[in-house]
Image (cartoon, rainbow, N blue to C red; front, side):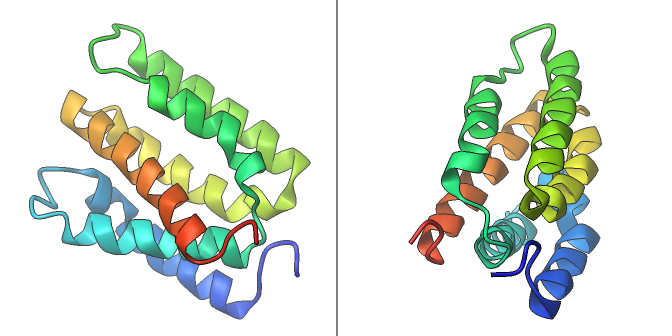
Length: 136
């Protein structure tokens, strides 16, 4: 499988990037339609790019620990960005995902509701990755 997927992966990534900010912002996407669409496409992109659950597990654990009640959650989001950059440097398959998350993080910082939406997005993307046959 190619390191970053083929033309379909690139088209998926570009579509996701055009919608990710809306999908993470609960004020702009009240009914969750963009959220659902983008999470599904991100899971498909992860699968098509050849990303394994092992490669995203540590990041997923970090995301699950984020809490809007933690005064340092914005700092921890910035640290997550650095950890994702490191992971994408080690595993080129993660580059598309890194671009998506990098674009989502500033929105996640805006409010506790946006942070929770980001956490839900990450979890949904991992679930869709499995649904599309990731790690089979």
